[in-house]
Structure formats: structure tokens, C-alpha cells
Image 1 (cartoon, one colour):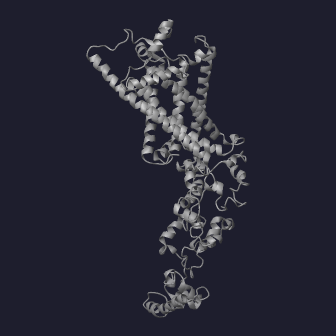
Image 2 (cartoon, rainbow, N blue to C red):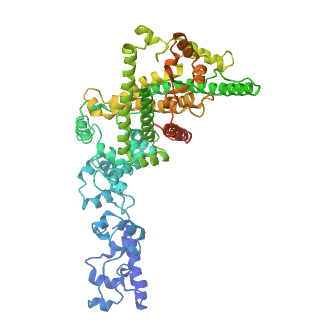
Length: 617
């Protein structure tokens, strides 16, 4: 017997022999020595004195026993011990646990109550206790179990994931509770950088998971629809990748992946689940990120500067026009300046309406994923009905995008090869004034606009298509290649995984995310300004909604086109009556303003997200 235990036993005996009998004589307690006369086979004085309950008398727990004679005669017997009298917090947690639902009581785990000692944070005692009812063999063979057995206080034991007393039900697989638990508990330790560093664990798991589609959907509050930590690593049999029994061992990866991707192949498993923009470890991802970031910054830099210069110069021009009108110089080009001319055919208007609907739909459903760390993203995703519903809407809008892109291709082919009104050979049509293909004139127009910005020359006169309109059109083709191509890969990973290595999906994710940010940022700032926000058009240009423009606008904005049509004698072929009908104007113009305000609202949320300093992957 240790000296510490011997001293405790002596103190207990002194307490029982001197203090408690005196109290018993006054009716305050029953002498514990009297209890041992009958119950020494259950309670050993030395063990009880060394236990955490050693300072308590027997009647501290068995409160029903107030009269020793009645108890001895069997008239006064103890009932179940109520631990809540001393252990209120633990009892409250237990009442909210799955153990209580299964009628597992305190004594079922604490059966050694008379000799129970402090656990002193010894995790092996917790594992031993849980092993009494649960099969922990797979856990004990895992990296966590081996670590606990080896005395590593950082290694996860049962209570680190399930807690000691408030062991909550996990729910059924596929439910929110089940999926949320099997990822959240892993993050609680693996997000601790200091803990991971002192255990030699490369601390990227949580960060890279959060940056992935799975992690973003988890953060938005819909973990049941995506893979969590345990879906790949299992819940208890967590082993190093080098271990042949591990779920992430190269020989077992296909079997692991097919649980969510039934047609996964060996090529598919080349995906980097925790890939990052590390030049040494993942050079392809690093250079993809660098190129996309460079494209993003350079495009915004050029066009935002262009927008600011145009805005300033446009305000100056408007003031000059107002001053001239105030002085009696009427700013009117033609007496019949309000006469209407057709700029777009109904098919062009229809295609542009599809562009607006699909682009806003893609933006509304995609931006919450891009900015999944923002509270507004969670609210918006919830409003959309969850990640699954948002995904369906996103894909439906993608189908519309492919449809209008096919329509644009069809119109282009018709113009180049079959249109009887188009003049000249194929190359004249391709690079002529009616074509959206960039040509040398656009370089002169850009130079002319820059001179006008800096008050070095007159504002250029334009043909049918301006250089910024051509850029918008060409951007659709680049966007379909970048966003559309990468989107298809992410939409049908199992199909593309049959002939493309899995890391291409990492590349596709970077391209899709950054190109989408470029597209939304460009449309909601540069395109909105070029079309609606510039001083001479504010607050909105409705030509794309009704396909018409006045003679005044025609001659002022596209003077060279007007002059060419006059020279060819075809100007009046484009004359038309002004679209009539209040309902027509109300719905189309109302639609235009709603779309504009939605776009500006999304822009505001994006700006707020960047200013808030959150992470955007």
C-alpha cells in the first residue's frame, strides 16, 4: 500500500471513529462503521477512503437511510442513488444524451463508484470504459488509438469526438446531423495549428477542405449533400496513407471514391483532395492560379481605368452640351431626330434576354459558393432552397447558356455564309463593318477614345459595332471555353474521369471559380457602365429590349454607320414604327431595371465580402 493511500485510510478511520459517531448520536448521520459491519463485502474502507467519494458518508448518497434499526429490520431500504444532487452539470448533459435514450444510467459506466478515482485526463481510461459496451478494436488499431495508448494527450480518444456525458445521437447516414458531426469533430483538432505542428501533422487538411466545393457547401449549412472527413478517412479506422489497410491507400482509393462516385476510375483518383497553391508540391495548381489571377487583375485594371476616364470625360461633355443649350445653341442633329430605326431583330432581343436570365441565375447560385464564409451567402443559399436546389438552378441556367451560345454561333455562320443582304466576300464579311470580329479600325477607335479622354481630340465616330461591344462578344467565346468547359468537367466528373487524370478537376475548379469572378465583376461594373451607366446613357439604354434607336442616337453614336447606310441608300430600310403599348414598355423596361438592380446588389455583396476580409477561394 502506498503512503498516500495509507494516510487517506487513517484519516477516514479517524473521521468514522471520532467525528461521525458523535454526529450520529445527535441524529445527524449514521456511523459508516456500522454500515461496514454488513456491507464490508461491497465497500472496503481503504478503497473507499482513497476514492473521489471518500470524504462523503454513506448516507450522503443513500439519503433514504435515516434509522439504522429500521434499515436493519428491512423497513427502510435505499432507493436508486440520485447523482444529480452533486453532479448537476454532468447529469444535465447525460439527460440530453443518446445514453439516456437507451436507458444507460450513471452506474452502468461508473460501476466502481465506491473506489472511483480521478482520471487525471488519462485518455486510456475513457477508451477502456467505452470498450465495455462498444467494439473499439478498429479505433485502437488506428493512428488515434495507437497515439492514446502511447500516452499522446493530443491524440483523439472517444470523448474528444463524442464528449464524456453529452453523447448525442448521430442520426442516420445522409442526414444533416450525421454529416455535420462527422466533419465538425475532425476540424476541432485539425484546425489547431499548434497541435498539428507539435505532432508533425502537415496542417492543410481543414483549410484545403474548406476551400473545396465540399467544404464550402459544408460551411453554407448543407453537409449532407457532400463528402465530409469520415467519408474518405472513415470514422474510426483512420490509418496513414502508407498503410495497406487505409481507406486512402492507393490500392483502396477507387473503392473509397465509388461510395459517392459510382463510376470512379483509377484516373479519377488522381484528384488532389487537399491540393493547394503550393509551387513545390502542386506546380500545376500553382501556375494555374497565377495565370488566372494575372488575367483577373490585368483585365480589371485596364477596363476600370477606361471606365473612370470615360465617366469623368462624359460628365465634362454633358456640362459642355448643357452650357451650349443654355446659350441658345440647340444640340439637335436632325429635325426628325425622334424617328425610330431598327438596330436589333427580335431574335437578337430574345437571345439577349436569355443571356440576362441565365447570367443572373448563374451568379445568384454561384456567388454563395465563392464567398461561402459570408453570412449573406448562407442566407442566400438557404433562400434558394439549399445547395441541391441551387445546383439544379445553376445547371438549368448553364443549359440556357449553351443554348444561346449555339444561337450566336448559328447567327454568325448565317451572316458569313448564307445572308443575302451581307455584301462582299467571306473575308470582307468577316472583317467588314457589319462584323463583330476585331479589326484595325478598332485600334484607331481605342486610340481616338484615349485622346478624347485626355482632351487631346474629338470623340471618335463609330461604325455598327464599337470596340467594347466586340470585346463583350469575344468574351462570350472565351467564357464558354473557360467557364463552360470547366463547368462541364465539374458537372460530369465521372465521365471525364474515364480519360482525364483527377488533378484536372483541381485545375477546372480554379479556372471556373476565377473566371466566374472575372465575368460577374466585369458585367456588373464595366459592361453595366458601358451600356447603362455612362453619362450619355444613364440610367439605362433600352435598345436591347426593344431593338430600336432614334435617328438622333443613330447619327450621334454611330455616325460612320449612318454615313455608310446613306451612301448605300439603305437607311430607310431600317426605319420602323416606335414600339407601342404601355404593357410592353412596362414589362420590358421593368425587367431591365430589375435585372440591373439585382446585378448591382450582387456587386455590392461581392465588394462587402472583399472589404470584410473574408477568404474567397
